[in-house]
Length: 153
Image 1 (tube, one colour):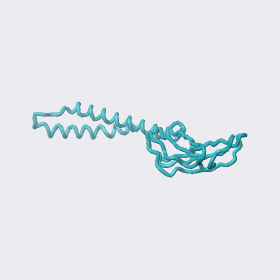
Image 2 (cartoon, one colour):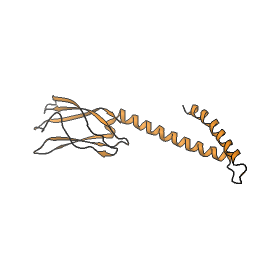
Image 3 (cartoon, one colour):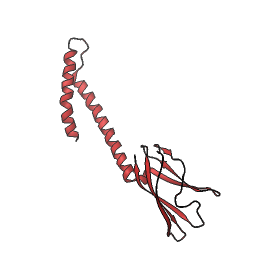
Image 4 (spheres, one colour):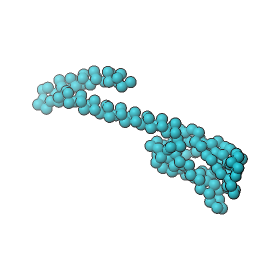
């Protein structure tokens, strides 16, 4: 892809440079074509590199969401079990699809549920609290386990 881009870009840059040079030939302040091409090429490479790094990070967030999104539980002694997400990725997460399981003391699945977040979680921010769909209040020995199944950026 880079080679194709370079092959298409250089003739256009040369044509633009020659046109610019011809227009400014009557003026004392002339632009050297080689300097102009070098600056344009440097800028293009930098933009291409940044774009590639951003795409790679986006793929990494999709493939390994657990690296970027942490799940925290909050149990109020007199209230419900709450779930909060922290988005440590450089992207806003529009929607999370989650799979929660309620496990008893013997690690047997008592209840399981697939659910979705309702609001966007901004980059490097925490979400609001969500009610856990599998238990209102954990009993002695019970555990909850939540996995991220899918996300939309």
